[in-house]
Image 1 (cartoon, rainbow, N blue to C red):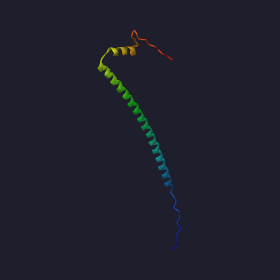
Image 2: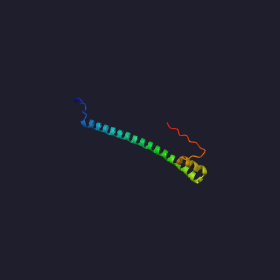
Image 3: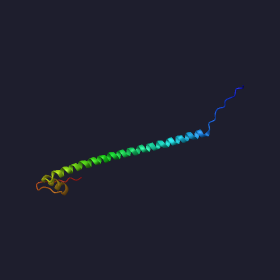
Image 4: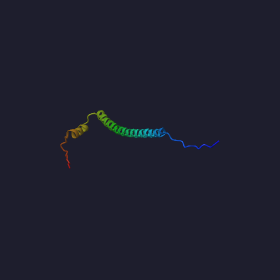
Length: 99
């Protein structure tokens, strides 16, 4: 029996194309995952901002509810007249400072 020389195996062109295609798919998946990660971070930031707004509004509502429960007192009427209508008491002096 004569020894036969083993010839190196040829790589078919299909295996290289398959590897390139798989690599392209993996890159596309990676880009999509990064995009989704950014969207999730943006949504979390928006959620946190909205939660802060809700808490601020809740505190304002609680203060208004306390004012309603307290009723109309003379002190509250004077405060509203000063803040909302710009009225002052006869013995009160107001200084306006502008830059």
